[in-house]
Image 1 (spheres, rainbow, N blue to C red):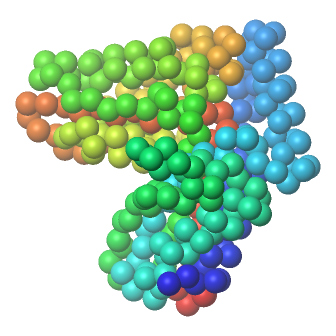
Image 2: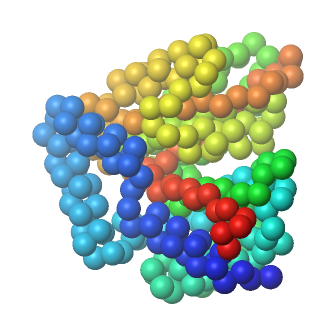
Length: 284
């Protein structure tokens, strides 16, 4: 069932995400621009900030590729409108496609038919996490562009590859494909028991705020060392070479099988379009 008030809130969330970068991403880009030593790199940042200025002035999406719409829900088990959420998200996607507007990016697999409204089989993508006893609904939203998706991958490593193998996997992917994802990138790395869990954890890591760190000291050390190493490669802003190539490296992990280690990678482009909102069940 479509809840009109909930639909309206989600349309506003999609619109704000499409037009305005999150504060941490904008602050990160401004810092990287100040530190950029190469003239071409500085020119690329100038293009980025001109792009952001025009998007705000014109109230239009930052990028013409408005991505695949992805929702990450933390839903209280006592939220009174659970049955309305998925239908309302789909309706909000249809409205947003025409109103904002968004580029229609939902293409039905195998039939290769664009649905025209960003709604299709399992699209928008919705992931649920249930919060026992809560009456609230937190909606995390991300616009996943095609360029950054090219870099994403997951693999189960051989027993002796270990964490060195995970680092090599990430570096190989970024050096080969990172330029296609419109750097500077936010890099999410997942360590887990199988390819699907590692991939899911890498997306969760990528959506973490810039400047946050994994609470495990070893994981945090790996985050910092990988960030330095990836920046030393010199891919630079928009892949045109430069002082820095990534805004951060975030790691999330789960326990793994003693014989194997899985690693997943998700990245976002310089225009990391993610935001969230918490809705009180009593407020609808």
